[in-house]
Length: 142
Image (tube, rainbow, N blue to C red; front, top):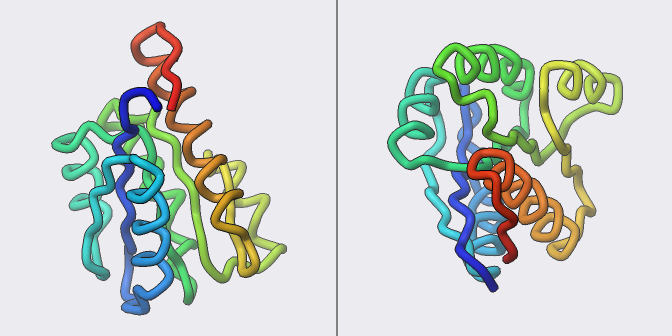
């Protein structure tokens, strides 16, 4: 495995259900990545600030309620902060009818119930490698 990928796992908005995000953080940590885990109820400004401070390649956002509806606002703020290269993935309960809105906003991947550990780790690793390759112009292997 190459250099670990820095991944933030967070929850924005008012949803406090964090069991799933803790499990995903453990999956990614166990796969050898550096995981920055935040408690729930993060603000968009707080996530942008932490993404910059921690130099993350991927942000994973957990949504059990409707907090995924503010992800386009987060992506806009990341772009304004010149962090538009960071890959965004969403996990949780996202109605199929809202997938297109999230993809159009810039979400790279949506993981719903039933997504496997392997699928999540492989997808997030590939996204992180692509971000690092684009950022540094080199291939990174995990």
